[in-house]
Amino acid sequence: MEREHELEEYLKGISVNLKRKRYNALDIAEVAKVLHDKYGFTYPKIAELLGISRMHLYRCLYVLEHALEEEKRAYLMGKISFRELYRIVKQREKDGKPVYICPVCHKECSAEDSIMIHIHKKCYEKLKEVLTNGL
Image (cartoon, rainbow, N blue to C red; front, side):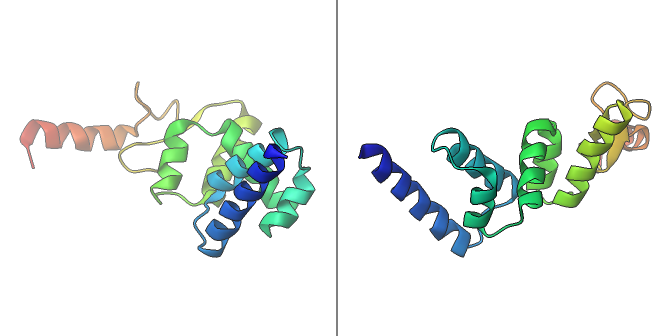
């Protein structure tokens, strides 16, 4: 009985936030994980409940699991789109090579094209110049 009430309240919260369009792709994945893991919903049922395609839901879940924190942060800050984020994560899996988001310019950066903090070399030079000469 308590669990049913808890689920009902959770679903009400989801409904309100969906109407206000407050969910981004990572939020959708988090909600889906709770509904699946805690309440036993299937992913197709969750997609239907959220009014999204199953494919979009699976992509959201994939990105939540496989994206690096700086990639998620760049997405949440609006520096890259969800489509770009998904492509970066899938490309890393396909190539087996790390791809990162440069924290300065927020563009893709390979391991070969970066220094220790995974920043483009050109961005590092620019940053170094600013730090050396001031603004």
